[in-house]
Length: 121
Image 1 (cartoon, helix red, strand yellow):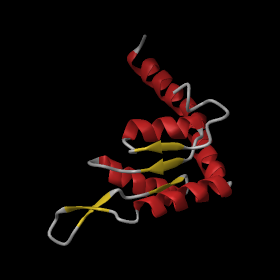
Image 2 (spheres, rainbow, N blue to C red):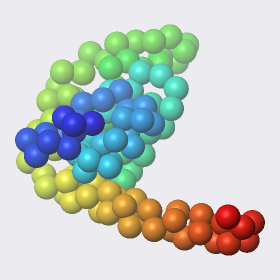
Image 3 (cartoon, rainbow, N blue to C red):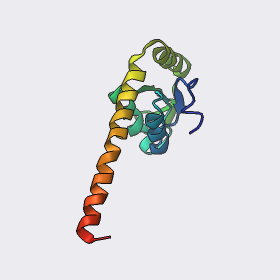
Image 4 (cartoon, rainbow, N blue to C red):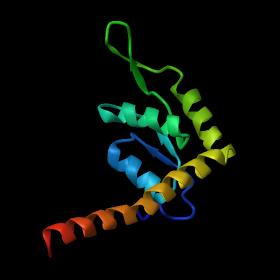
C-alpha cells in the first residue's frame, strides 16, 4: 500500500482481484488490469465501466472453451498504457470514486452509533 500512495505512482498494473481494486481506489491510482481467473474478469470490466482504468486480456476462451493466448497482448498493453499516461480522465475518475468512499466512512460511524444506542453500550 505504501507504494500505491506514493506521489510518483501513476498507475497500477494488477490482475485486479477485489483487494487490489480496493487498494487502487483508496490510493487514487488508475489501473491496468490483466485478469487471470475468478472475479478478476468482472472487476476488470467494472474498472473500464467506471473509467478508472483499462483492462487487457492475456488469454481468452475460444469457441470450444480452451484457453488461447492473446497474440495482440503487447500491442493491447501498449495502447492501454499510453491511454492512461496521456489522458487525465482516469485520474479524475478514480479520485471521484476515492472521494465517494472516504466521504461514506461517516455513514458507517452513524450506523454503528445508532445500533449502539438501540442495544445499549
